[in-house]
Image (tube, rainbow, N blue to C red; front, side, top):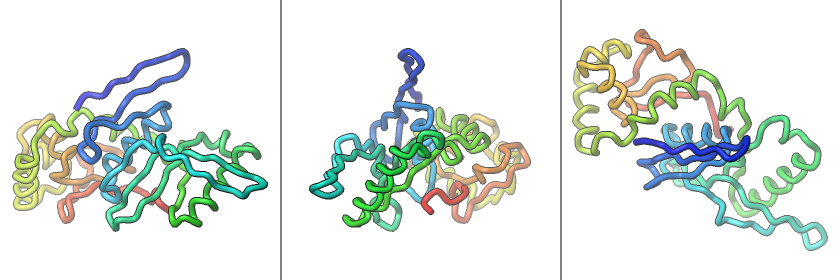
Length: 211
């Protein structure tokens, strides 16, 4: 699926074409782009969307807080969490840190965890580069074709990305299979021809992001 990126001054914005959250999810910074990439490919996430229409009235009558998170995420256990994307330097500013602490406490009272993601999660170089490589191939094949590819990979059990290329006949086809769930890789390790792939289950792996 193609994505769109536009620039206004020093700001970038675009959208993440999604097969989890049709048709696409917007982002308004490089940090948010990294977040949508991770949400789209993480096996822990079944659905996500922009939360700009969710305005929470938190705090107390003496110190009210109107808060809108960046993304609403449904995990595979059915729970709903919210994501705030903030550069680490900005999140450490006392006024911002205090606001986020109040938002986290207020949402927790309503049963919603709030996770603050900085560049250590959204901008991890190896992970982000691999996800950007896979993104254009996401949604390029239909559900039936993806299931057929998953069944073939499970039956033949290739051990590496090079083996997957051999099975798929072309690198483009192997990337398409990976991007659409026929197999998984460790997103935090270099994506080479020798990279191990996972077929049972055929899921992407990555360091904890909801902790």
